[in-house]
Image 1 (cartoon, rainbow, N blue to C red):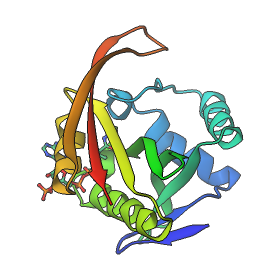
Image 2 (cartoon, rainbow, N blue to C red):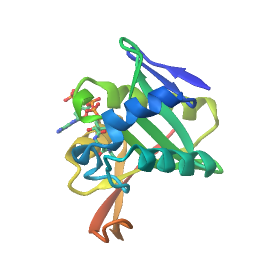
Image 3 (tube, helix red, strand yellow):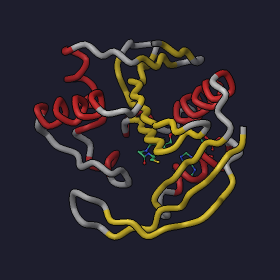
Image 4 (cartoon, protein in one colour):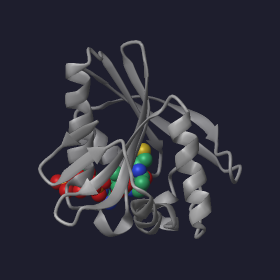
Length: 167
Ligand SMILES: CC(C)(COP(=O)(O)OP(=O)(O)OC[C@H]1O[C@@H](n2cnc3c(N)ncnc32)[C@H](O)[C@@H]1OP(=O)(O)O)[C@@H](O)C(=O)NCCC(=O)NCCS
């Protein structure tokens, strides 16, 4: 499956060669992983494992390609429960942020929701993740509540702010 925006293509398939590129652009970047639930690693095998585990789970996974250069620069994950989308993971590699790409991806997801009879979209982010929260607010998400969570890989305590948008 393929979703197109002005500058990006979101696709479910990634080639072996492009896994190396997304590893470089996204999964090896500590800065990018700072507020995510996975840890960055320099080992390509770790990235392959991570992607395989998502592909084998019931999470929807899209690779975000920059159209101009046809390279993978980020990803989008989410899960669907009845008429609700939750567990959104939106990630753009550090060299590609602040170009309007996050907004294009989240807008594409909201369009997908409209055509798939989704009524509610939940978006959560680390309380400190200003970029992510500002992006959600810009697209009409409204603060719902916060909860205390612990990140698995490093046992970090963090506050997760949950935002909701009704479609
Ligand atoms: C959060 C993230 C997806 C934003 O993507 P992006 O492509 O940089 O966002 P955009 O360029 O589309 O910005 C859209 C809006 O978001 C807000 N925003 C983005 N970065 C921001 C920042 N650093 N500070 C404040 N607001 C910011 C702004 O309102 C911006 O609109 P503007 O450019 O008109 O001011 C990106 O920073 C990212 O992937 N970070 C690493 C992974 C992550 O933390 N993901 C979120 C997990 S829920």
